[in-house]
Image 1 (cartoon, rainbow, N blue to C red):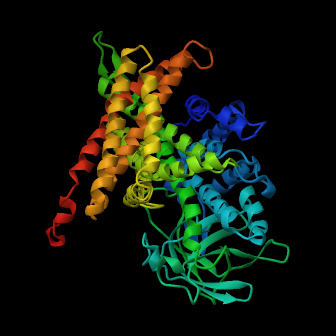
Image 2 (image 1 turned 90 degrees about the horizontal axis):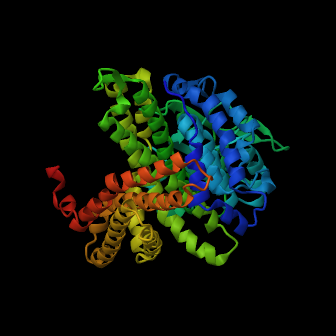
Image 3 (image 1 turned 180 degrees about the vertical axis):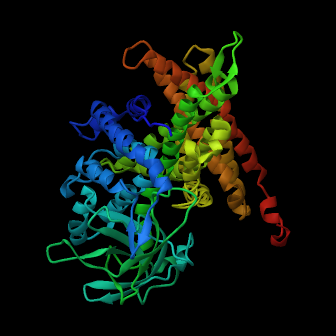
Length: 593
């Protein structure tokens, strides 16, 4: 089993050079927050991730959660780890101060969350869902509900869940059938929810479920869904957990991966109805839940980075230790000296660095979208909307390839469970599925985020990319000249595709659905190339300044060049596929499949 070390150098570089964290904090009036503080926080988080969470990763895989007497018992060691997480204040990092949070920027929380998911994704899913519940309640909860639930959720004393999916209502939430019957100041909730991550456990004194259900007079379809808080334990007169609510986990799913994270079938109301409380206005639950879902979508995209980083570190460690082959002088050599192994490792390294750059920049854009400056908000909110499906869709699909490369680097040993490579590959497989499949992200990206605004948000991003392209041309270097040429071609191709789609989609109702996947992946690889090119410019500027080790900066340049050579051409290939129209996808009869 491999060890895990937080990627301090690259995380700090991205925060300082790409996110421009110091400038953001200054503009936002965060006088005591800067990149130096961010570096200290990431270093401290890395210790908990490496020393406490990472050793439990394989434990959770081999000895996952189990159900006994209608109680979910988490993996041994998880409760102690969670208590350390809470005691050290990590749950409070980005929460608002009025409810006990530290009110630090979202991008810093994202950098820390990367470490939790790399170290132990099964464990980290629990606080991740709580963070989403907090976002939903901050945005839509009444003052009373906020006062009752936010302090304990933000402190980590309680955890939160998201209850959407039902046996007959997966991605199509218009089919949600769970019911909510008014009962005085509360509601009686009945129904069954499936695939509920960390729906029950014994690590905290309460679990707060956010549940979609229908009122008796609700309109049909998605317009008739309301959102409710349903606590595991009802609150007593002092606001403390009291009587057990009628909300029980009745079974656990047997899964391909993330065994340490219990995936529950939750039954509400088997004994008369679970006590629930309406969040916001009736029949607006789906809109409210999207606050939580969009937070989760960026978080799941981050998981794609996290699991890829863990797999990369494992691949490097194994490649340095595994002796196979002979040098010209007759001495034995580790496989890291083989050219094809080095190709795979650099493919993993450049891929993870591109994902980290995108995840952090997108998280920083969320901070800016919540600015008090109306002009800044107007610019960054469409950018956040545009990038969220790319973060979720592209990064999780890319993680399938990078975790598979780890297995390949290990050779036959990668196929053996004891090495741990297989676990990362299995754990990664859920990422393009939950919180909206890649197809759903792709439809959202091409439809709501491109066609609906006639390409305005995408055009704004392309314009910003061209600024980087022009900056590359100012560096007198063959490597930068090539990056300039390749990135310019890819951005111009993106502009061409945008114009073509806007022209053709109106007359071809099947076009967007047929090409949406390639359109999404095209812009994922393009965003990765753009941000690594920006990284190369920053590294070139910093060489010899003493801010960073020169070896680290030179490696950043090599990594960017490799990505431009190896991955950026995929953006153009996906563009070709988009402009083919993929008419065959809808031309073939169902019976012919």
